[in-house]
Image 1 (cartoon, rainbow over the protein chains, first blue to last red):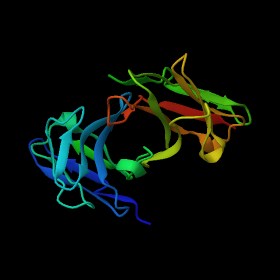
Image 2 (image 1 turned 45 degrees about the vertical axis):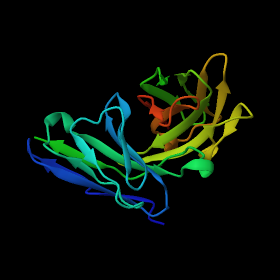
Image 3 (image 1 turned 120 degrees about the horizontal axis):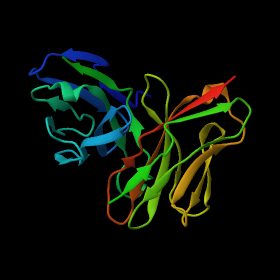
Image 4 (image 1 turned 90 degrees about the vertical axis):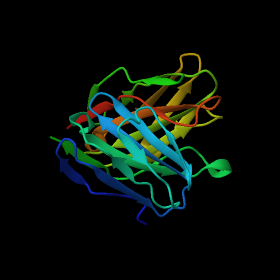
Length: 115
Length: 114
């Protein structure tokens, strides 16, 4: 079982560059989300989606875009990278509705450095 | 608004001793509570959850947690720590009355000393 797959695992960008972090899950989960992890701050929600064609903002959405064209994929786009976006990014998914028991399934993370 | 606090950044315990990682929460309705573990350079893994029912919840790898509504706490415990338990532990809460999303604590680094 692949679960939640994130690519790339590591990326270095220069300020102002754009890039997309990819996330795919093969568990037919309706809910997908992106978090960033910074030392001493835990995980903060960037954007989430409860199904194809539906996205919403989390706690720290500025500077990031998402789309959800399929159930499986939920890419995160950095439009113009800034040093403050240096972080480890995690994609997570779970079931929705009556089957939702709450626990998230996480990818392995993508470590982004913005110079 | 919902929030969760992990008051200890670091917990050290000797192998074979009991361990406790503390978590307190704040919600306006009833809470769903979770513990996750993160090993170095890995994603978070689900350990256990409290939804309703028995206040003592048992999870993976011999961990358990006790839901205490009056103290708004959900401390993670294990009777006998292993060196392999050394990792970063996160508590998370969701307010069933008002929120769809999980809020995570800042994490507690557990080190089990041989």
